Length: 566
Image (cartoon, rainbow, N blue to C red; front, side):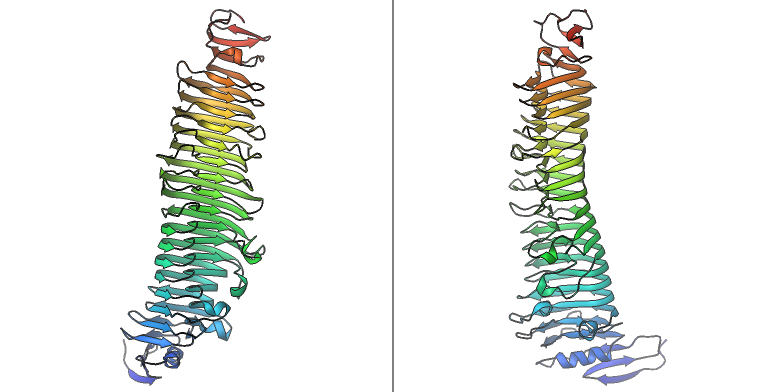
């Protein structure tokens, strides 16, 4: 209970002093009609460590940074502060920016913060709100407007910072985080940005690289902004820095570049080669423009990336929904893509791996493609994937399209081990898996509980590939299990294969071969390699062994029902 109260005038403002249990409160002076910088900073010094409030409806003009001190809560609801032309500085900063040391427990609530046209400046002075060396920072309910220059909100060397409920009308980045930074939350952003809406750069471009270090434990969520660049950019910085344990969640709006950009920006060495690891991207519904992607992984030092909960519907899109495309040859340790719902896929695949990329483990799980352009693959590997797992995919893919495609133009494409399970693909033409260049690498593919409808071939190969089949159904009368081109060699093993009556079973080009150890494979066995113990169901009545199940012993096909041989 307040037992004593006095009013003290400070620098044209009011300080309300009570007992020691209640923080002092300072009311900022009324606008002067001229330059309010000195009066506002005097009030902020006097109210340091307490609550400082701007009078409602106040419109201030300043020509130098306003400086907030440790322990201060600045309430600026319904106030406007404009940094005037030619000032060449930040609009709002904390004391440690210029005074050294560290600040803590700073809260800024509300207000419209305006950087006028022609403010100018050099390097970090071009940012509008700039905070450095702060522990426990909160920016809440602000509107930021700029007519030019650089970042609207620039954070660097901060811990436990929260930036939330911000509306932008700015010409550069919205929220820009430089290292070192730990436990930063950026949430509920609206409006428009002229560059990346949220950017993590452990090291920044040379002109703005005033602090640098690792950026860890960052949460970015509820973004619904129109961006002239990316909505979220997560860079690793230079080789000695990293962005780790980052969650990007709930991204809507529209980007004129990639929606989420991960890894490197090759503008200079400070923004290339740093590590990005333990990144989660989820609940993304934002749109982009032709030639761009929902998630774009360009980094040369990327560890684990987990993408889930993406919704996409853009029949005019010509890029992959998720693309791994490092500028130079690079390895991604682990990429998981799950819970993706594509209403209409354009020309690009859902997941694309460029020739420069090697992905050690790629997991695609619970993915639905309701419609797609003819020829669009679900997963396209032009680079290398060491271990690919595809599960629970339902895709409608018309034309000459495939669930997994190693494109013919990518001579060195390789998937060293692949498994597809609990998956159904429908459409006319194409098939499930394609590796049609003799230089492709696809040694082993396991297919379990897979169904195709209207797809001509289960696999279309020019590679030496072992197929392991279990509970596979092919509902098409024109093709069958394997089309093997010259130089290709397929060995088919497994059980419980069902094919449509009248289907070819296999087609073998000159120089190619198919060896079957699947009794359920209905095929003209004259097309198969005679290998000891091989088996199939012969459909060619002209052969002396007759139709029905046959096994090969001593290079002779023998009918298991009649004993007849060929």
